[in-house]
Image 1 (spheres, helix red, strand yellow):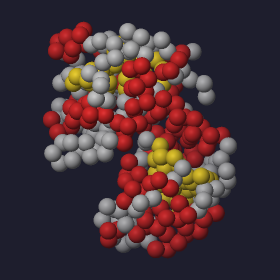
Image 2 (cartoon, one colour):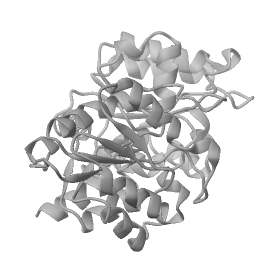
Image 3 (cartoon, rainbow, N blue to C red):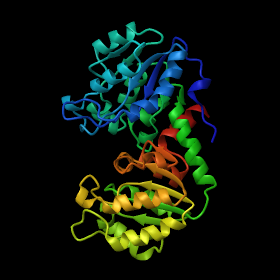
Image 4 (tube, rainbow, N blue to C red):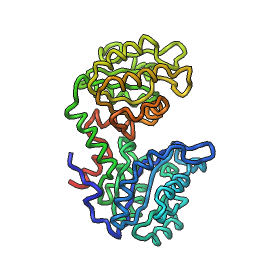
Length: 349
């Protein structure tokens, strides 16, 4: 898949609108609790800084529902980025548009960063409103998408902005495509997909994955959805059941899963098997994580909760690759592309 990358652009003295994925967890007092997603963006940011671009960073944080929620401001993320890039001038605009933001944009210089407020404070972002997309595009000369984890969504900053600006992909995004593309095109078999968590949207991708993977193992709250239950009952590749309390998979399910995992040569995993945060309900997720690592299979993991579980059990460094987004990872493997990729491909055709 040949796509335009940020390295091959001439962006000196140009304002670059950089869509990042800074949807990070925050502490109770509003500080960044995990800076992994910020670290993932640094290669692209440094690439733009080296080109003497004027960088305008945009991102979302959590789900404020199109309203301004003080506790979900990106200001703390901007402060954290300042610590990570101490030699770079970074300012925070307490808005997405408006006169103050406009004045700050006018004074932005090459090699500097202006960080804008949470995109989802405006309802136009999730609605993919064309006027909102145009207002974002008007802030810059060029657009770079480095938010793989968000690019399965039809949001204004993902698919709207590239309609109005020349566009390319960031370095982290390109790395995701490279690694997941290899899994998609030439996987070692058997291929086992493990789905957990609570997001029912995963099952649309699961239906497509079922046509080419060897097993799909379903745990977590997903098994409680009627649609999933029907799939489990009629599809031999899909297994799974919850314990009575509904907070973990059953011991019998763990045993079934472990037998399949032991045979795997490629494992794709997103979503925990239960409420692993509670020690009483961690057994299913912990044993599956241990089985995945012990299998020797090439392992790709996606989603913040799955990564958090692996971190809790001391196994995070024993998997081959951690994708920045579980939903985006599944969508890419199911369809071979994402709306965010197609938006940039169309712009460059």
